[in-house]
View 1: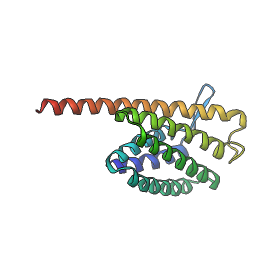
View 2: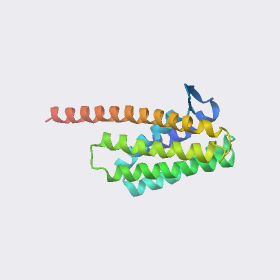
View 3: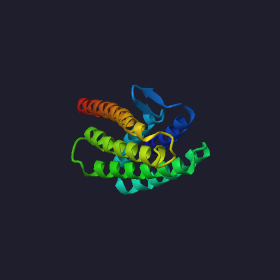
View 4: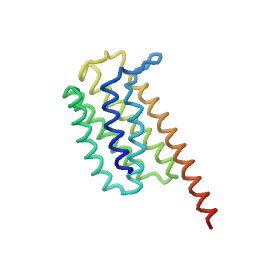
Length: 180
């Protein structure tokens, strides 16, 4: 199920981003799919926790292909598809490697690795895909707000995911203790 949730969250992020206008709050611009992008890091960590680092890279590759096909089929330009692929590879690799190396409880590893992955995903995608350097959807003046808006949303999603995970693990531990 973890793998399915991981892949579905990636497809959902692409579909929601393509179908809905970006959310604007104050100076921040956030594509609606960003809510699901934050979840992909959590699901990827759960996949890695069960299947290990090496197999996780195989699932990341499958997710990358799936994301590219879905993005292109939804009408995204080649520049957007390429920027999405680049940001995906960088962000997922950063998340995977940080998650692997941290010697902390799982919820903290999920939080820290996801925040770094979300940072790279936001910076690379906005600059390479949306700015005048890429497809030119937003002017240079809007780039910082687009990056920070996405980072804020992804960090909140990571925080919520880590809290839910820590509560779930604590409840599981309590139930195991009661059964003895």
